[in-house]
Length: 541
Image (tube, rainbow, N blue to C red; front, side):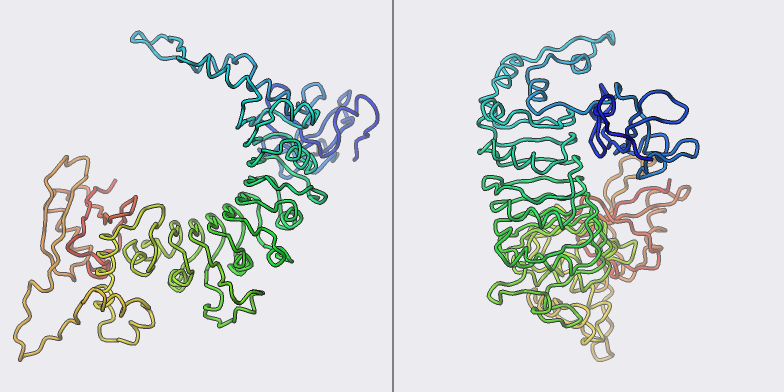
C-alpha cells in the first residue's frame, strides 16, 4: 500500500527521507510510508528505525503499509511528532551559542559530605564558550546527533566558518552525496569529514573533485565498494578512508588501482565487515602509499602473500600490473583481530610482507592456545620483523627469550625428525644457529648417566587466590616433562588449595592477559615454559 505525496499534510515527509522523533535527535529512522492507516484517523508516517526499536514490521491488522528491515523495527508516528531535521548552520548555533541544557547543568555537580549536590563552575569556562562562539576562529566543529538534514545557504556557511578544517557530522539525517560535495567546495580548508551513521544514497556519481579532503569517515553509512569506486575520482588527495560496519564482502577493483586512483591513500579501515576471502584484500596490493589496513572483525580464514601462497599462483594471476612494485610494498600495519584464522601458514606468510612490523592477531583460533593455537612467544619467534604484536611492543629482551624458548620447544617435539622441523618451522634452523643452541646429545652407556639437573626447569609460582591472601613467590625446580595436572597437585599442596582446586595461568611478557593452562596432559616443555616463566595460581570459582 503506497501513501500519497500530495500537498499538505502529505508534503511534510517524503519516502526514504531521514527523520527523528521531535525532541529526540539521537533516535533516527527512514520514512517508508505517508498516508492513512485503517481504523485510525488522520495522516500517519511509517518509520523504519535504525536501532530496531519499533513495534511491528510495517503491517497492522493484516494490512501491509511498508516493509521494515526486521519484525519490530517499524512504527507509525503522527506528523507533528516527527522532525525532518535542521540545517548545518542552525545546528552550529544550537551547539556553540545555545544555552546549556538542564541535562548538561545537572551533570556539573559534586556530592558534599552530607550527600547533597553542589553545583560546579569550571574556571575559565566562560572564556572557552566565548572562543567557541566566535565561529570565524573555529578550526574543528563537532555536531553529532543534532538532526542535521541540510546545509543551509552555501554563502552563509563560507562566511560563518571560513577556517574550518575538521567537521564531525556523526548520526545526523544527511543522505545526499551532492550535499557532501557542495559542503566541501564551500569550505576550501576542510580536510577531515566524519559522516558515520548517516545513511547515504546508493548513487554517488557526479561529485566534484575534492582536492583538499584528506580524511573521510563513512562508518555505518550503508556504503558498498561499488559506491567507493564511484567516489574515487572525487578523492584525489584522500589519505584515510574509514568504512567500518558496512557489511562489505567484496572489493570490485575495476580500474580503481591501475588508473592512479587512491594513490595517496595511507590508511584503509575495513573493520567489522563481512570479508571472508583474502583474495579480496589482494586487490589492494598495488596501492602505492598504503601503510595500514584495518581488518579486525571480519570473516577471514587464511591469509597469504601474493605469489607465495600454497596453491602456487603467480603474481600476474592477481591482476598485478606493475612488476617493479612489490605487492603491499609499503604496508607496515595489518590488523587482523577477531577473524577465523587457524593455520600456521597464514602466520608465517606475514614474513613476506616487505615492511610489515605492526600486527594484530588476537581473537583468532591460531593465537588461542585453548583452541589449538600458539602462545605469544611462538608468535613472536615465527614473526621475524614484528615490532608491535596485538598492540604491545616486542622489546629486544622478549624477542630473544621467545626465540630461544621456541627453538627448545621445537627440539623437544621434533628432535628426531629434522625434515619435519624444517617443514613445520621455517625459522627453526635460522634461530637455532643465531642463538648458538646446540643439539641435545643422546644418552648412551659410554657417556654415563645423564644428570638429573639437565632436564630441570626452574619456574616461579605466584599465588593470587583471594582466599589464601598474599604469599611470597615460590621457585621450584621441576622436570621439563612435568604435566600441568601434576603441577596443579603440587600447587594444591604448597598453597593449601585442596578444598577449591587450583587454576593455573602462564604470565608472559608483552601479553596483556595471562594464558590459561587447562590441558592437564600437556607438559611444561610442550607449552614452552622455561626458567624465565611465571605461573599464576588462582582458585576454581
